[in-house]
Amino acid sequence: MNRYSSLSDDFYVNMNLGTEMELPANRETVLHFFERMQKTYPTMRNFYSRDRGDFVLEEDKDKGNYRWCTIEPRRVCSGQVNPESIEGAIEQHKLVLELAPYMLSVSPLDCEALDLLFGFDFTYQGNHNQLVAEALGVSPAMERLIEIPGSTVINHEPSLTIALDEDCRTQFRLSVETRTNAYQVRTGDFPEEQLSVYVTARQYGSLGPDKTFVETLGRLEEVCREMIENHVVEQILNPLARTIALK
Image: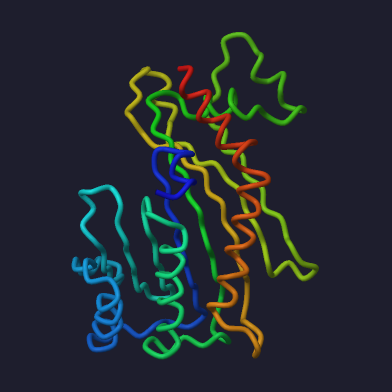
């Protein structure tokens, strides 16, 4: 079990490669791509299509940890939920990026954006927005708002995106997504839902002639790991876990 798994109830590593042009969707190309994925990961045996034109190959979900991969009209995605190791999840994403140029005709020139996302889910039955405000606080300029007698926080999803280079093509985003609505707050009927923290590194635009998708993914992984270790664990994840434990 990787160390990140102990930081939340569920943990996952996803990769998204968005393209400017539509990807091939003919039967032979799609099946050939997924058959190659299955050759490396034989337990990925559940194949199906969605109404909107997405094709999915995934492992069984009953054990709580599984791999998945999708081909969408303008996006190739890969993910692993509760992976045994970060390295294993990254290797899966690298395989997708190695196959895409040859089997799906995806050129580095056709890259709209390449994302690497580390996701952390916390299971909590209660007002997610109030919890986030208590655990992480709010902007000093808004602190007095949550002190208004009788008030209840019903929407608080802090998010910050920063550019890591001068032309803003490499970006990092930290965001919190809650799943509590006003009806649940009003009735006091809170289902057991997952509160999510997303750590995302993104490379925008076409890649240079000397860059590959795999090399770019490696750089994005470095960004995510550095941010998690230095800015996310102690400042975001641990406070959320402690506050949930006290509820």
